[in-house]
Length: 107
Image (cartoon, rainbow, N blue to C red):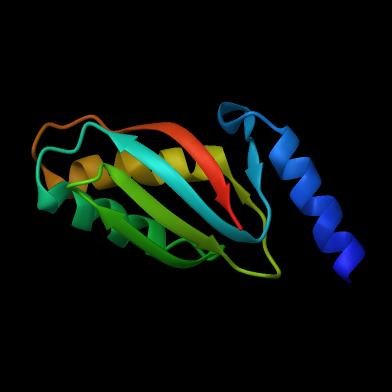
């Protein structure tokens, strides 16, 4: 079990932050650009929490970032997070356009 975890960490560390197409189980920091107010942060958090792969999502407007926790038995495609951002734009109804700029694995 420890060998598998170390192997996963090595793979994640060697991958460039912008090169993620899928997120294996774990916690990730995501930089989110385009938020206009805390309404945007709440809308993104609401939409990301609806995803079955997401165990927890916390979005911080002041830091323009989020922490997303992927369930142990799931893998989340980054494109799915992007689609949820589009839904959050509509939910917030402020005319904002959100963009994920950086994804980093949090040990």
